[in-house]
Length: 344
Image (cartoon, rainbow, N blue to C red; front, side, top):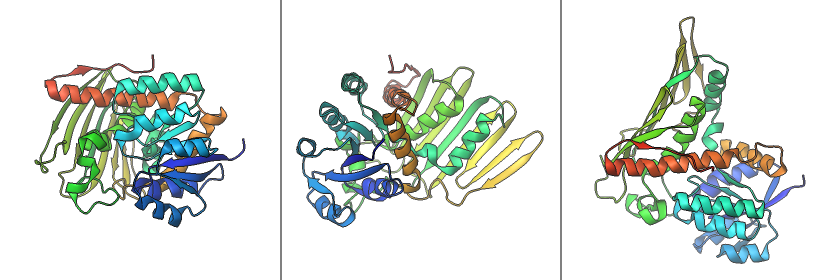
């Protein structure tokens, strides 16, 4: 397959510091155009992609540029609109998480992508963190037996930094219309696809409590406590912007042992052995993770070429979307809520 030409929609921190380094690591694609509604993004485009054409509107870009796909790196509130515009123009889509904020939009996108014969692919980049890849390998090889419990914790001291902000108050992540949710949207999506993968099955229900422990005057939660039920297994997830330091831990318990991902080290404990595997970079280090993005691009390109697993990523995103929505519903009702996928 010849080199694909792509356009980036939304040229902020994640595009510049996360996506661009990934594109520079692969010869399979080139970025030839950029669109962003913010005028200052044009100067950033000149600096980082001097040969790319800049547009203030996605529609104009797609009418003038012969690109194969659109990489959507806008805030979540703009994802659904930009995905649908791209599909209507017959382009493949690579989109930051969360893919969308509403299941109705997911269903519209599914219908249109099928009609146009185009791929919609979500950036599930945490799967390619070296420490998570090793954890996944150990689980797949049966190092701890069948997984029956996961404890997943993400601790942050504030909302993730966004382009142009000077403090929490002007961070788009705390604007419901733009971000679509607080800490749950920021980190829950990644945890959902990873825990579903490690469990090796789809979830049956969620129970969630959303609260504000530190930022009590913002309109979105800074803390989320989630339980996810599976057949004969459970995942307990905790996310917060109210911590005293950055930290990521995942404890995965199986019938024959346990595996602890402790930020930059894996500790594997079984009846026969205890093993410690250190890693150069902690999971909590940085927010953009450019070193993981090239693998996402390759997986996306493989699906376009037909050599990847067709539709797997999109189905996975549907489960994450359902889990996000049902978490909010559970928190509002104060009770467990049943889950169903969106693939049918």
